Length: 600
Image (cartoon, rainbow, N blue to C red; front, side, top):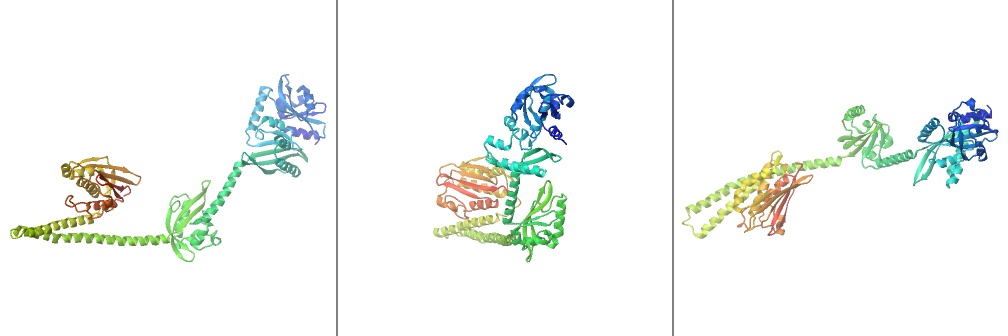
């Protein structure tokens, strides 16, 4: 193949319109892209003078290697402005004139070129063509965005670009070495350029592909694509893998990873402690043979097979308590969960987290036994209290009856002092009976049916009816906000409100009219109720004692009662998993607040 043939083949693959010209200016060959531009056949154009198309060709010769703005004349003698560049070919009598841009060409030709440029503009890669000296013959816009810089760089090298930009030539030198190696080996070479831009590292995957005709080098195609995101992702993946490995190895729980076939692929240090097996002893072995008691192995394997086949259920994505197997110590209880690991929708592994719950199980058993003992003791105590209180009623009734009989039958023969003593005995017996009755009622609190929905507005309506006599006598004004529907024990909720309202009426100021307000509010977990009055209030020193059974804080002659009502209130509130408190200013009034749990 002659030199002319080589260069003909070269310009036929050239991405720009190109003319091969001899020293006389005669056209020896044009590439297919150029034929579209001149709109004539190859036979018509071969042998004609280049000045037929470019009348100012002499200016190109004088400014070889420079981009020249000149006129292009088509076959219809229409002129249009174009940008061209002429370069002689070393050791030959030929030169190459190629058209960089042709904005004034016939519209049909121009539209085709615009279409080609649009395609090149949107190729997500840097594309360049180099001559044998590593000078640019072509650069697509993705390689260099600035059109002036791109046009300036044609015929120049990366070293010229570094000088132009005033940047380090290390990358240019590295590319030159790879360029030469690719030509020497006639092999495609790939590498990654790494440099800093805008405060972060940029990674570009580059490739040199040498084009030869026989043993003759024609040109080098350069390719580059930004892989920064991929590189950063790879680094994150590696970092995450290392971090995950570190987390799993330092986890307080035993972590075991198995493949879908149930073979162990990961066994962290805590698993070694928990099960007594070293990692190297179990990797590649069936987890069911290592940690599952024999009587459960078939069930475990069946569960894995079902989940692999898409059957939902079993231990996957849940927390389960199960007996596990130690290497030498036998069975012990564990709490574990299994999470499937997917890749593109396919399960590639199962990750299990296991924790020894032997201590917790022992504690639960101990608490259960203590609770059972406590329940028995409470039941016995309530029964004892009730029976005792009931049995005390008989002698008290007898005492009251005989004291009344003494006063009735022997009134004439008793002196005033004896009568007074008998009256003291009778009153004490009556009070004792009231206390015993209160004790029996207190003991009964806690004996209950199932909790139910309770409309507190209806409860308060009934309570006010029951207390109507007291309310009318004292001219009490009771304001009740709209109250909620709660869940609880109706009888005891009724008694709770009744005791609080009754107390508010009872402990009124001597010359005042009772003003009582009942409100409610709620939180995520509880209902809160308040009963506020304008009564005599409670001294600060007595606030801690108001809920103590049989604890009376006021003069018994002025305020009747047994000191048991607020004790009942506290016990009822406790039944409803709540708390009761009081805030009071002595001489001004009190506010009792209590909560009722929403989770009853």
